Image (tube, rainbow, N blue to C red; front, side):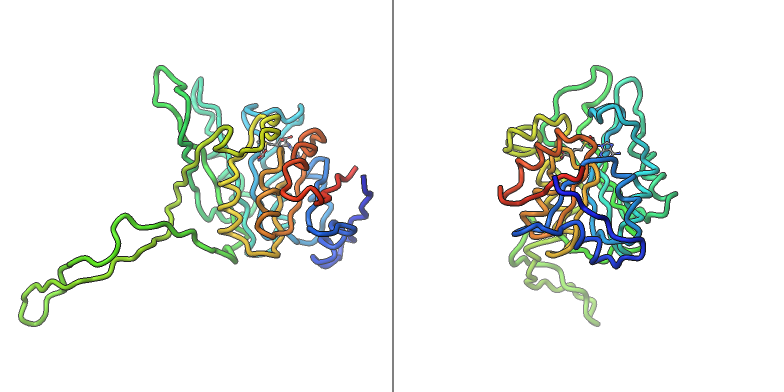
Length: 286
Ligand SMILES: C[S@@+](CC[C@H](N)C(=O)[O-])C[C@H]1O[C@@H](n2cnc3c(N)ncnc32)[C@H](O)[C@@H]1O
């Protein structure tokens, strides 16, 4: 494992990235093992453009016995985020025995620590097992889009429209008050809505079998689409609770610099195996 000297308190943002990526060749990415709140707290200068992460909540995934505190984590991420940077927080919650409302709670906590709640998006899972005999099957989780101020980057994902091409439409009335029809060209594409769908499980979430050694893998498509939406090539993408490394993999594929942190060395080991280029170093920090 490489020992990395973290930059001084007054370091420029480039120095922080430079220190983290020092010695890496070919790609600019780094895995760090440890408590993200402590690690991010030691960086005094913002250097992150985008965070895409999902917290452990309601004991739905094993976080190795650590006490997860959303307030400290959201504060630590804001602390290292550049003005205009975004944090996408994908959060599920317990539904049996009454909904825990954890996801809503996290939205309020984020706002209280200084984030702007730019959007509350929905991830709809296409294939969900039947879950409750006394209620509808839950098929969604929230994706809270926090911004440090206003998002500096938004590259909207476009989708084909259902009706396009030429269509005869009523033209607005002229001074003679007669309705006229004329051909108009309908748009081929429109901006996607804030409800995103994806299949989950092997083949849907990812085709990387090793990923499922982690109990709560984020669908690659979600991480990818958020990375494309809220960052540009060359930006730095963080996942402070990277688990099996989905965000890091998709950031690397799309030529963003990336930093993945997890308390579990075992999960970082899985994440390393999922990188698109085996030459990518991603050495863990002791
Ligand atoms: C829901 S999982 C993330 C899954 C990940 N998005 C993926 O695609 O595999 C949450 C992760 O947070 C990690 N974790 C919990 N508390 C942490 C902390 N304070 N610092 C770093 N990692 C933490 C856990 O070990 C767990 O892997």
